[in-house]
Length: 257
Image (cartoon, rainbow, N blue to C red; front, side, top):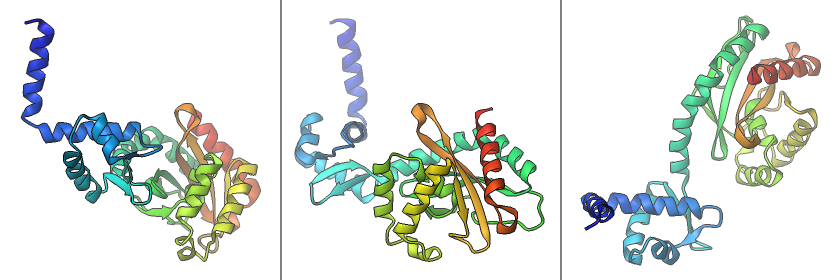
């Protein structure tokens, strides 16, 4: 018996003791590889050399826990929002640590409240904030708060600079949610997206909270993907377009340092 055979037998024995767990992990890996187009049950079973009934039993549990999603029209499976959320929860700590000093400096320089937000599915999630010294403090978000993407300066910055097809998918998904936030509409959010793309940053003047103006700037990661956004909120009297542009430039400069 060769060394390779001994290793394989040892690995098989180890896996047998937790067979269902390893099968679940293998299925999730296959789903991740096929996530863009989705994969049906029989193909998922074939790729993992498992009986269809076994795969159905496992993915049914994963669907119930939102780790896998099922499209009844195409009969296909994809990675679910629950798994995405777990990944975001792990990633957000790294992002928060990376940009904590940055938002502290911006808050000190502007005197305003500064927010760090990330994407969570079709929502934005506030993962950190620093309050400035100006006596009138704007608390549009608190840490852990979520908003539909497009509501608020930071949230809008997360979606406005994505590829257009992704932006449209978000608008479609959030269509019925916008009216709960100051009577926003898809048309108005789309208009703000176009303006933001033209400016290079978000200038959100009272579209969510009356009397409050925010400026938002996307934060880019590898391959120029938007991984977060930093926003500054102020009473509208203190945030005209000129100051918003200056703060946007300050954010961009701080992020690259």
